[in-house]
Every structure is written in structure tokens, then in C-alpha cells.
Image (cartoon, rainbow, N blue to C red; front, top):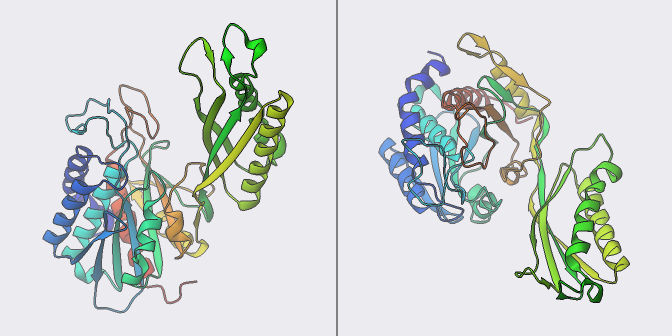
Length: 397
């Protein structure tokens, strides 16, 4: 029996898990009911479970009793503060919260893999560590679990994760060597001017006008200061000024994000933004303060692990069609699985899961976001096949 046929036999369970978890989304570090449900499922399967790792994180170990490598599988749990508008019969029952990034599907995949392993003990060598992680959406969950002793529970040789990817169709899988998802830095800019009456802007130093000039100018950083061979993004997404129509504020605050794939590019972007913001503010007689905070580092696929993944996937079929393996794809979206692959050789696999709603494809973090549930079955199959291969590797490199 191939793993894909096995995954298909589990598909009813996988969908059931996804649809239940979809109804109870909880935001970062508040995944209490989610964690309780997952623990219950794992214990019913016969796993010994460690709870409360890094907050609401869960770890379950499978030991085959046979020689082999130890493979960690990570599945994120948190939802987003978004009101759902999909119209599903299994829509979120938590007002203002939604699984709009596929984490409900990731957890369902994890439970399905765990279930298959317990029911087919002769198929696995070595050990598997199932990690259900909180707070991926704010880039803090992996760090919290690591700080709380994740890697002290069981030495790990390799790590894997899948991300259901709504930008690409079912049957497509990205597994490049090297960077696959970008690092993320938070950007905060405060502009200090001289407020006053909106009818007399000549008596003020208008920080909102200055901020608008800064917003336009920082877009030149990517097009004029970063090599065309590099990939990076600067987006200003928030601005706070006066709360009255006839008042020019003393201060305007802006915030946004920087996405990058290497430290040199990140530092160059930071330097240019600070120079531009302070220079423009000074030219108007104002002052700008610029701050940065690190959110996540880039996810970098280990060449050996990603090579094993590609070799396995290229031999698989979906509905008698060969899977499209993309070895060059990378995205500026970020993922804190990066902190796990920073400690253990591993790979993130992006699994095509595009699902139109009323004929329209909606992106991650949208209120109408949805996934093709067939992609969950493919994810189960891929993780099983790759894990079995990695369990039997004689050397990690």
C-alpha cells in the first residue's frame, strides 16, 4: 500500500479534524481549547503527551524501538483576529477569529500522520517527534517552545513542516534548497513636528505631510538601493495622527514590515530607511525617530533534507499525474519554523492548496480564505514518505 493510498483512507478523519478545528480558532498563545482537543486525540491514539511547552505547545513522541534517525514534524495551531466570511457550514464559532492561513489543515495533517503511525508500527524506523506549536502568526511560538526545552525532550536529527499554500494549485509542491520564506523585521517611525489648527498650516510643522513624504520615499529603497538580484519588501501598513479633522497633530506614528533573505540586505534596508526618514524630517524642521524589531529570520531549507524531499516527491503521483516540484520558489511571507531549522537540518514544504470561493481565489489572511482539502491528503502522504526515508538515512549529511 502506498502512502498516498493510506492517506486517502484517512481523508475522512483528516477532513473531520480540519473542520472541527476550523470552528474553534484561537489567537497566539491562547490556543487553550485547540490544545485540549489535540491532546485528547493524541492520548486516544496511545501517545504519551507533554503539554504546556512554550505556553500551549504540545509534544508527542513515537519510538518504533528500531534503529533509525529521529524526525521532528511541526504543526502550527493559532488562528487570526479576522471575522470569517466564507459561508462554510463549519465556519468559525468564535466571533472575530478565524483560521485564515491553513493552520487548521496543518493540525489535521499532523493528527492524521500520528494516527497512521500508531496504526502501522511496522512501517516506521527510528523515532518521530510531533510538535503542535502556538503563536506562529506573531513569530514567537517556536522560540517559546525552544526556550522551554523543546530540544531537550528528545535529540532530533531532522525537522519537517508543511504549509498549505493558497497561491498555487493542488498538485504543486515547492521544496527549494536554501531560503524559502523571508525574514521579517518590524518597522516603527515617529515624526515629531509642531501641531496647530488645520486652518493655519503655515503656523505648524505638519508631521502628517512629512510622514507622507517619508512613505513615498522609502519605496525607493527597494528599487534604487537593493540589487535587482536580491529580493526584499518594505511596506508601511499603519499610520496614527490627529483624531480630529481640524487639528494638526504634534506627532505622527507609522509602522510596517521589512521582508528579507539575508542579513546584509536587511541591514542595508534599515540604514537607508533611517537616513531617508531623518533626512526628510530635518528638511522640514521636524525630527524622526526610527526603530526596528526582529520578528523572524528566514526559513532556510537544508540542502540534504530538501534533496531527499524532492527525490521522494518526484516519484509520487496525484490522480495519476506527476506532482509539479518547484525547486526555485521562495516567498517574502515569513514563518517561525525558521528557528527550528536554525537548530536542526530541516525543510519547509509548501503544498499547493488553492481553493476558489464564489469563483475568486483569496490570499492568506483574508476573511474568505479557504483551502483545497485534497491538499491535506497529499501533505499526509508526503510527510509519511519523506519521514520514512529520513528515518533510514545513515548519515545526516
